[in-house]
Amino acid sequence: MSKITFFSLGGMDENEKSCYVLEIEGDYYLINLGISVPVYKVLGIKKIIPYMEWVKKNERSIKGIFIGNASHRNIGAIQYCYNYIKNIPIYTSKLGAVILKAHFNKKSMQKYADFKSLQIKAVDPLKPFNLGKIKVTPFRVATALPDTYGFIISTGEENIIYIDEFIITNGNSKAFISDINKLPLLTYKQKNLLLINNVGNVDKYNGFTSPNYKTKSFYQDLITRGNGKRLIVACYYHDVHTFLTLAQIAKERQIPFIIYNPVFISMFNEITNNKYFDSTNLPLLPINKINEIEKGIVVVSSTPDRLFNKLLSISNDEDDILALKKSDTVVLGFKVESGFEKAQAELLDAFAQININVTTIPKTVLSMEASEEDHKFLVSLVKPDYIIPTLGMYYQMVKYANNLKEIGFKPENVITMYNGDIANFNRGYYIPGKKRVDIHDMYIGSQGVLSEGSNIFQERRIMSESGIIFCNLKYLDKNSSFDKDNFELLPYAVVPDGFETKAFFEKLKDDVHTLANNAVKDAKKFDSKEIKTVVKKYISKQVDKFYEKNPIVIVSIC
Image (cartoon, rainbow, N blue to C red; front, side, top):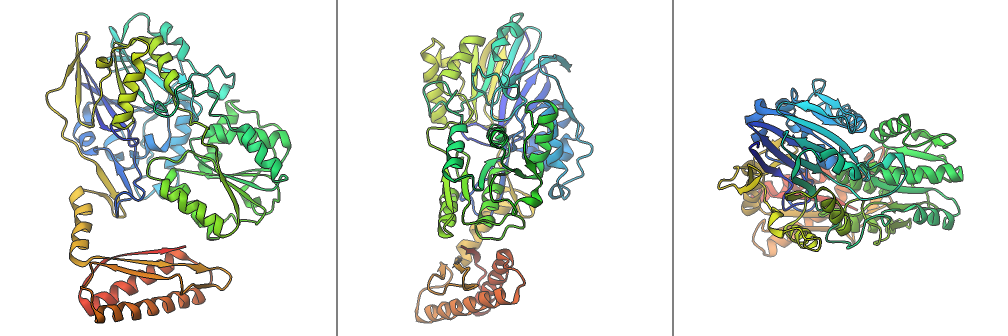
């Protein structure tokens, strides 16, 4: 039997940046190259990626990369390690290949590389292919993104089964076909040594996820209550199930349907070309008609971090294309991911302040990920010797293991790991690794990839030496000016408190208020980014001039 090693560069005891490594007889195989967006978590850091230095050091031994679910959280690190992986084949589905190509063809990606050398290989489901010393069989799983794959990795004597997200469903939609029931037939010649899969909704629901992910009746009711007025639905770009649900409603009701995302348009073309959705008679309109329609459905989609920023721009009337109308209904059509709770609250407040009807999907709606009964069904079906749960917090892993006790699966055979932990398998048995892979997170700032010391520690040093200043401005749209009564300038640990300090910051507050209003008057169009830059530079310059301090300055406009 083959010598097998598994460890994680990201995705253990966390819900993002999945990146797993399988070593089989000296050859390495990567699963996912994910990313994390730490909203409100880490000051100055835009993104966090797995430890790509390991990939750089071992690129010659990496035989392939598997991406079964081409969502942003599984592919977001690719642009940061392109030079290391451009000659390594990436295996995914046809739709996955379209998503990857559309993602890397965006103008914003050109600053990293041209990505023309990226070896993207679209493989067919249930058609095995050889890769180095292994045989790989892709199979379809039902989740929010059509054409999502799991992979059977066979050494010739035993199987390793990897599944990202999945649900057990008997649905007949071609877009969400599942081959999970075929796994016993696909794997019967060798024993199933190891199952690797995400914990999903294991801590949220004790039944099957299906049919609790469906939202068609919810959206139909909103359209009826809104007398057919414009419905603006925000969803993550990988949530194609919501997208197709809305397209079907638009088709049935013969109301305009607009997609506000170029990548989504590419995905939709691939979906219709593969006959996953019949777009015949769908009143699909181009983006430039978005403000002309009084009735219809507009889908606004992006990655989680970009989607929140896009919606804030729309609420502040700063978006280049979409202008809100008082009759609109805005729906946050997604389950809030960890770290984005505060962003959602601010977003709801922003829409409420401009008197726009905004709502969220019901709490009873589940994401299209496995719940307790889905996991039990899968494990009973494939009967693995061992399981490594992924993409979840430690308490979710414990919940997962306890859940499987009910079907007789031994909890000790559920291997709970942290990033860098090593699991060895030799002669069909699990042997805990005595050593760990020396890894740490890698941080992305405005300057690109940063080491931990050059980013977090630098900002902590600045704050310890010069403090931090928060400047909060509230813009009054009716008056085209900033509200002086709701303007805050809050210094922390900049200079010792005292009468002179208080007088300085009171004068600085008045000056900044005047400066901001003058910037609005002088500008042809309200540009919050430009105003923030002007205000930040002015505050920094004044504090440096009078106190020889260079604090971190954070400017917010609401």
